[in-house]
Image (cartoon, rainbow, N blue to C red; front, top):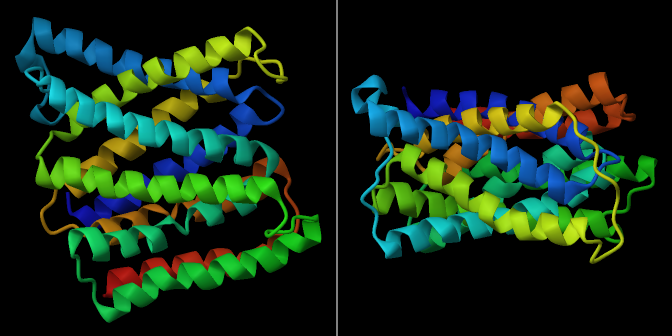
Length: 299
């Protein structure tokens, strides 16, 4: 599959993931929701590991997981999980308190930060048109900040906006690290995704136990079927995304830009399913994301 097509498919599943995330954490405890979602993901990969051990020829090559990893390689994959865990904690608490039609476009600005990192760290050289496509997310961000004032959300004073920005920046770091793992160290996408899911359970388990023991004031947890759906949609999004990054011609900054077209799906879902307001005022900013995607493809 061409890496641009794979990035767009990943965007669709990522948009579904944003909607399931909002449904899972709205008026609900975040940490146990994160734990159970990652248990679902890890269970899928552990089942595939068992099948591979029993009958390796029963799985397609793309699903096979490397078993002969060194301790150093496991540490590299654990580092990936730690970066994502920090990003998710910031982002999930922010999504809980913000409309998804605002949160998703803000998260879509991550290609800007990924582009800067790719230029500095990976020496990538996108075309001028592609750079313009990514930079349109900056204009979209400021447009969204103006529209959000109608809902009483001041970007400079709302702490959840800053939590979301922190989560977005950590997401950009994760994207650069993905390119290093897959493009430079040549890990299989299935290996990264499998161990990444398993290590996330190990990270969130003590946090969820601390929540259970009431180490801090917290909300009650309610099981919702959107939690496993959140896990499955992210599994699909990440699997296609990792496959795109393995392509030697793929530019991580552009893959991230296309992938963040998920904001369009999340925006529409926020209006349809969560009855969020001021859609007309937010629409130009969301269309700015779409314009950026078009420019990156044209470039």
